[in-house]
Image (cartoon, rainbow, N blue to C red):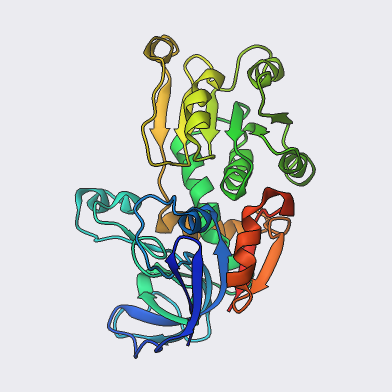
Length: 339
């Protein structure tokens, strides 16, 4: 079967590998139809992805078709069903799993990061990690995982209707945060260094304000909020300087949610942190409950992913095309690869 492997930073190989055998009990064999490319894949290609080793088959944003189901609970699916794959393989027995926080499993394995992912024609996955839809396309289903990051982050923030929310970073993760913050009733301000992405936020997502990230950004955000600053700030950049700088945007008594991550230390000025009594939150991946809710929202048209996909490629083209997607001038927002 056709398989794409990241052998080392900057080097993909397209090869023919042995297909999986019949699925084991509790597993389902699926045919990969679409794979979304995200920041994790870009970081891995550059050699900057935390918790990563080579060689690795990337691919954790998957829209798939069910081929065969192993013995055990079929999770309501049948051969031929279209599904999104929840790529977070949790143990089910650690303290986090026992409390329903499966995304925080102490031995979590993420497809395409800690273990080989879906950039291949066929893959066996735990049946319980499949989420079906009778109406969404495989392309839409490949975006559910990205949306889950934003949905979970917004749930962590406990947004109140009408409050100001600043989303720093207007890449795919930031956009998913934006959409779910809006759905929760927040008045969203987008902040980014890229004016084209800010235009996208204004025109496609109808955010209340879009601010370029420069030396005067904090004062413009303050003016937009009538001098109060936002009561919830999301940093979706995974950039150390941005994450440490994000504290200045938080209103007194507000919350700062780190959505993106980087491999390093975060430092901040403690007196300001205490003076404002800021709540600092981390958010990691999402849960099966998030997947179920997102698919329902997409099916009802509450969440629209139509504007997101800016680039598409066939699997055979991907190794050559991938380096181009690193260049911001190409206008890449979300790439979907067809297998």
